[in-house]
Image (cartoon, rainbow, N blue to C red; front, side, top):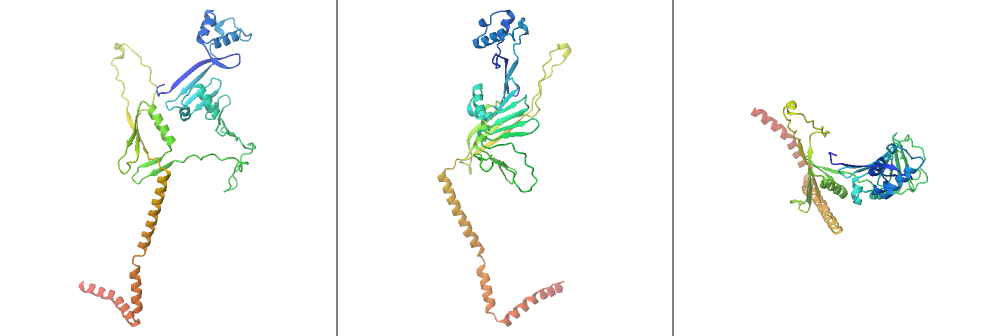
Length: 361
């Protein structure tokens, strides 16, 4: 496919056990030619099953052309980012994330069976109009086409209770067995952003999110990955990992099949249209790992800094206290008559200043 995805289609047909097996085109051609199937088919087991099926009274046909070569087909769609969609051919579609496939290192049928046993596969049943999921703890979740949700917890006594009506404010509605149901090992990690005053922003990522982004970038042929660059001071202890990806500015369209005409009809040959592109830049800053010893040293240094800040704050709050005490003591030693004269002199100073201003005018 144009965007890098691949599709694998395998024709299949039912055997006597009502199982979908791969259909052999050579067997069908041998039937049309009237040749024995055992000499043509490389897969002896499939040939024997198809031969036995053709001899069955419900499957016997006098004309081999009426016997269908394939009744079903299985399809595997592999996205460029690693996500896999597997249609078994009988109404069941499996959806597996690229992260889970990368964890097991393979996407063959045996590996997909292992993921399904672990509960890492979304299973859509098209004939029932529902999608089904089982997590690692054995809990079952089922979403139907009418947007209703059914679930079954692995350790609960029963889940067939009515949906709560939130009619009482500030009252949490819980599962009836919430008192003894096990809690998950960890809650979903929040997304943390740091926004600076100049408009720049950073996001604190988990290690697995960074590794997933780098894995997808290495697989993209239009992406340049630069890893392990040392940064300058004051971040000399950090490393920089950059992703440069060429992106198309024009929308993706299905190419039209070229129509070849004689020169006398087509006239001039159209030049191929140049695709407009731009470069998308993404950078990851890897901080060094902090050991327990470094963490203790940092906490002790922070405690010393906090004490110094508190001492400095107390020192600044005491500035000018001596002047206030000296003024109070001087006022206490002066007699009452002298204090009255000082207050009268202070009151007459504004009048003198107004007279001087009027005389100057």
